[in-house]
Image (cartoon, rainbow over all chains, first blue to last red; front, top):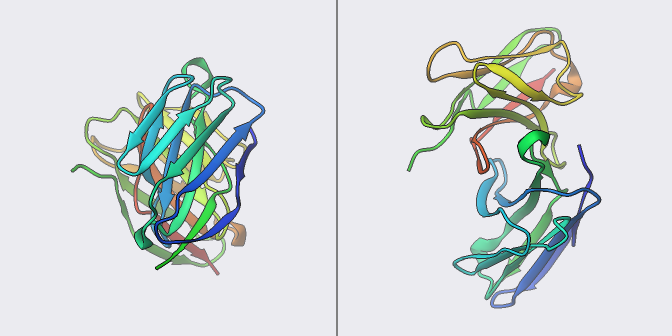
Length: 113
Length: 110
């Protein structure tokens, strides 16, 4: 599958701070998805983006689908301890190119009270 | 809220043995997927299934792997002769544009 570059690899922040992470790809995707994974559990879908330029929020989370369709970012505002986990971006080629997700390597987020 | 379920949560097997991992996708979903995640690594696509046949598969999904939807609710992944490197978390997912993941089966091959 296509290579996704997700950064940063890890973040260690204080409660209340804002967080930003992003993914870039050399290939175009038709859908970008952001997941959170807690240890020993499956990825949980946070936000799905379907159109280039789309900006979508889910509570304190905001994600954008880059206009080139090769990148996406996720912001978390006013972080809390339960935000701890690994965040993955995933790109989906879509339509004739299939629906298999290509995952980034993840951003590990630690939040201290 | 409907969710994807998987059984067993943990499977330990000897190298060379066959294993079957089971999934119950969300009932009105049409696309089904298997992914795996080796410890500490990213999630990797194995196979997708639509309309009772494989629609995509990765290079990981070789002849040792097969999938089946034996009835209206279950979706299974079979590994015919397990290898040590098959040890991983195996996730089932269902959906289409949005993919919803199950809690995973941890497969340990000894």
